[in-house]
Each structure stands twice: as structure tokens, then as C-alpha cells.
Image (tube, rainbow, N blue to C red; front, side, top):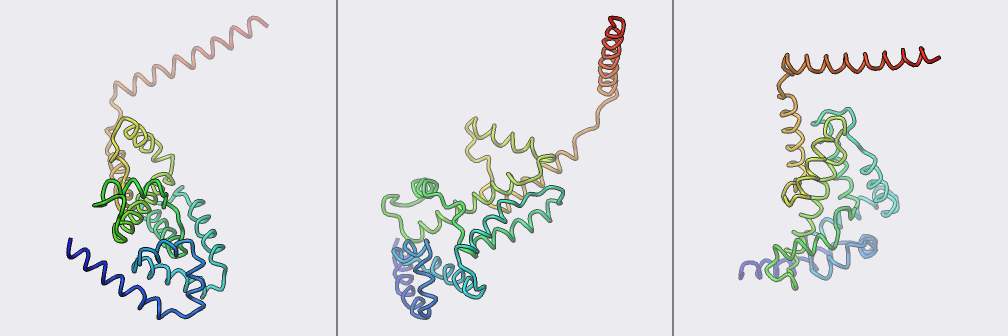
Amino acid sequence: FDKTKEREENMGRAFPLILGQCDKPLRDRMLANPEWEDINRNHNVIGLLNLIQVCMHGRESGRYSTHTRMDADEKFFKFYQKDLSNTVYYDRFKDLVDQCKLEGSTLGLSERDIQAHLAENAADPNNPTAVETQNARNACQSAYYAVAFIYHADDRRYADLKNKLRTDYSLGNRDVYPKTLSKAFEVLTIYASDANRKPPKTHHEESAIAFTSHGQVGGGDRDQGSGGDDR
């Protein structure tokens, strides 16, 4: 407890020192960012450093920060795996996630999810520390991108996986969804390997399929023939 308090006090002292190194145009951009109020209230040094990076990037790009953030979010939502391999899909998806974070995207930062995480993990959920709040935000956003990675995966290969995750969760398995992007990639990889290891159909199964197909075709021919006789 003492170490936690000491760390928070050090972060509190570092906050104004870092902020003092920012010029007025940069501070103005930071004040206009929707994340600023929470970061400033908690003297969140990590959040401040991330915000500085976001605002400096926006200034260098010469574009309105809200516009660049919306562009990043739109590119993220429109990106799907399709024919990409899992590795290429993961790399490109991760690049889009990094871009969203750089632009200050609030994707995954649901206040309901953050409060739920604090309720389970904070020492005092009614009065969480700045570190606990930031950890909750990071965990919620990480889980969001992990689920999105599964959701945007190719349906032709992973529709059954998505249905299984939904079913397992509805049956009470609350830990079925991956919580990190790397874990989501692992889930896809393992599922693809298991699918490739499925045993080939036995001779009995192939014969049954052939018999069924033959019967269906034959039935169709007889129906067409009956129709011809009627005419």
C-alpha cells in the first residue's frame, strides 16, 4: 500500500513538470481532447504522455484531430480478413489498431465496461486510483480489439468458431472470449490447425452420401417425368 501511495505521489509531481514542457498550441489541442478532463483530474502521467503523442501527430499532419480520428475509426471498421492469411491479417489489423490509438480513438472505452472492471479489480471501486482506472481502460480497450479481430475474421473459415463463442458465452462461460489481440490471433491459429486435422470421410460415409445424392436426383427425375406425362 505504501509503495502504491508513493508511486502515485511521484506521478502527481511528474504531471505538472511534463505539462510545463508543452508549448501553448500543444496544450490548447490537449485541452480540446475529450480525454483531457479525466487525465487531468487523476494526474494520469501515462495518459498525459499518450495524449501528447496524439496531439503532436495531429499537429504535424495538419488535419483536424476529430477528422483524423474518424478516418482511423472508419478504416478500422471497414477492414475484414477476406482471403488474407492469419498472419497477414493480424499484422494489418494491429497496424489499424495502433493508428486508432494514436489518433485518440475511444473505441472499446465503454464506461459500463470500465466500471465493471473496476468493481472486480479495484481495491475500492467507489474511489479507484488513477493507476487502477488506467488499467481498467487499457483492459477494456484491449478486450474490444480482441473480439473485433475475431468478428472481422473470414466467415468462410471461421463462422463456426464465432457461433461456438457466442453459444459458449450464452451458456455461462464468461471467459470464452480472448482478452488480448495476441490471444485472439492464437485462437484463430489453433482453430485453423484443428480444422485441418479433421479426419477424412470414411468409405462408409462417402457411400452413404453417394446413395443419398443418387436418391435425390432420381426422385427429381421421376417428378419431372410425371409432370411430362400429365402434360
